[in-house]
Image 1 (cartoon, rainbow, N blue to C red):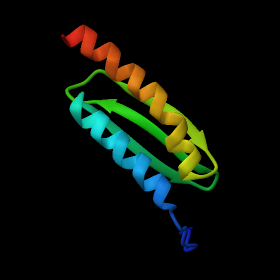
Image 2 (image 1 turned 180 degrees about the vertical axis):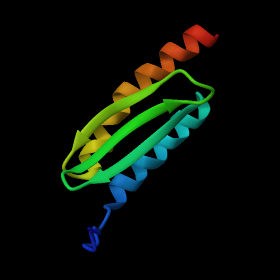
Image 3 (image 1 turned 90 degrees about the vertical axis):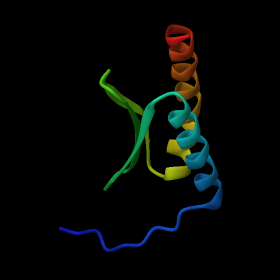
Image 4 (image 1 turned 120 degrees about the vertical axis):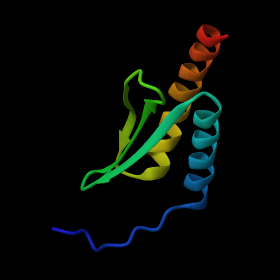
Length: 84
């Protein structure tokens, strides 16, 4: 079954998406955005291996990406310290 309901994405959500992608790119972290019938899951995958997972799952994209920002920054800081 295909979901044909269009969803308007708030400009604020797009701003946060841009920040997540910028941080991820700088640290070799791929950011994933997965829509489903319950909302959005925002996750990560490390380029070159190293696993992945979810930062947040919420009913709307703005909340999901906003909640994902702090854990992404923490991950980037850990990687910066490790990769030096």
